[in-house]
Amino acid sequence: MQITDWPGYKLGTRVVRYCEQDAILYALAVGARADELPLIFERDLKVLPTFALTLGLWVADAASAAGAFAPAQALHGSQSLTMRGPLPPASEFEVTGHVEAVRDTGRSAILDIVCESDYFSATYSIILPGQGGFSPTPRVKAKPEDGSPAVMHESRIIELSPEQAVLYRLTGDRHLIHVDPAAAQAAGFARPILHGLCTLGVVAKSLAEPLGAKPWELRRIEARFAAPVFPGSALVVAAEQPPVGDSAAGLGYSASVDGRCVLADGRISYS
Figure 1 (cartoon, one colour):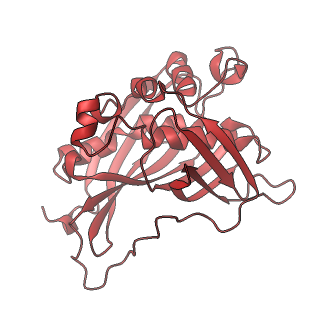
Figure 2 (cartoon, rainbow, N blue to C red):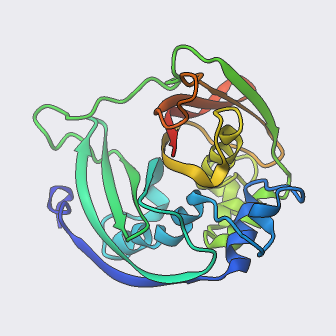
């Protein structure tokens, strides 16, 4: 198939299952503390909404298996998640996937791969370097690497654990570049890198309190992965200040390490 033939391609439906232990492990992997009982204790357990991204990740793998892209020649460019309702502490339900669109930046192609369920929808945007140029006029222009919202009022520093990647990979994404130094170096990194979805989950959880919400009240989040993050880094998260009493308003945010933007074009909202 040509790159332009993929929009509308159906990736099928899978039944995803998880238990309370899986939800708790995810919460710990994105930085939940022992005193945050609603996230780490099965009594009255609240599931972090970004846990949904581990349940839908199979759609990207399915698109790759169908021939849409080779993992070694692709990058996870951006991610969005919209919640339709809270995830139960344990559940079993269907998730359906399809290729939504192929966008042309001029130099690269971007595949938007979508999963849908009763609880959430998510779009995994995969960059295919060197495969652009198929549209007479590229429909998407590459955004500046700094890409951060212009005015930030709230900021905090999150110390990522050196073990964060090896813990997060137990939630399902076991790509070798997150644990094996040789694999990471072969991919061009000095050492294993943190999962982009882990960084996103850490940020989503950390922004709830300063924005006047609970972590499990996340309604929507999106961001572009601008640069890799190494476990053990200090992540600086900045967000726009919400209007008084309005945590549901969509707000801009960014995340950086050592002055280098790692999450750009961020938007987040809570119920």
